[in-house]
Length: 469
Image (cartoon, rainbow, N blue to C red):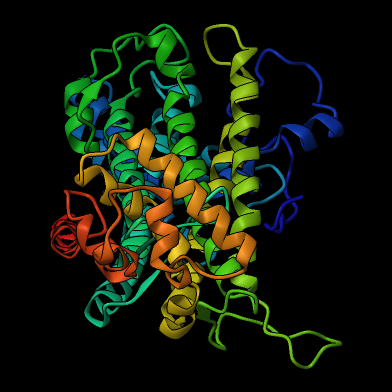
């Protein structure tokens, strides 16, 4: 289905092909073949490509300078009509056909010269690359906005000295600074931005001039086209140029992995926002209520972010499965690349602001985080205590394990065990052992680069600021 309303027109009026056919295309094929409902959004980029091609045709001696300029002005008029809401008609097979029809309306038969030496194969590949490069910029900006929200929370948590449990296997593991947990979601997003930047660079290879598959028969300057359209380099092989959709796959992989990172952030927040944890409290603007239960506050934005990560993964899988079965050169299967690409990018452009908004209005409950800390989480610190006194770590691990078992059997925390229990577990324990059961001391001891200690955390915050600047 398409969201674009097609108005009536002669179905054969503006085909860019058809001279060798004696009959009309079957309506069922027309319906299947028509891509205007998907690729219409490429029109600003297709107009740019066509204007650059008009100049290239002039430089190759195919058009006079006056003809080239008339075509450029005509394309500007077409763009104005499209911005003003011009709609496709039934004969518009795709965005290229539509622009060709509108250009004929503006400048007459001269418009027929524009397609000289060019195929829709290299035309759509070029316009899609331009769209993808622009999408990388848009996505980068929205990821950066989420990173700024994360960094703001991390700085506030660091200033408050808030501690919380870290989890492995969803079991309480060791105490960490809450800011350290918050920043654990900053750096995956930073890698996502690096992937988007690399994808934009990989995409900036110009296919225009490759023609349908064999190259252009006219002496157009591809270097001139490269510079005018903002590409970094030229595609080296015309067969590959018209069928290469690596850039689409790379962008969709970057989006899928970004979606995965958002899903993990959402899962943490949904879990920590439950009554059982209550580490965070959600706001009103990005949550909803229940139609039956008046007390409910549902983190819908975060749950939709989790679900959307599966959707964009499906888009990527569909594209890769399509590419896997294709021979070299252009094949019509590639028409669906944009359906998957646009859906993935559109989905992420909806999800990112919603996650940033939901996180932005979250309130952190330092009291609940602190209440979840237990002295059993300092078992590793007890083992380290013995190591510093001369024990091997394996020996220390076994001794502390016996203490943990005793505390569980007695139903008390480690710090509630008497000193004699510690002395019975290992002779190197002494009265100062209880200092090792402090969550704050545990955090302070882990001050290596990248750790949760205070100096390491300050360095990490500085690094996060640098990444955003």
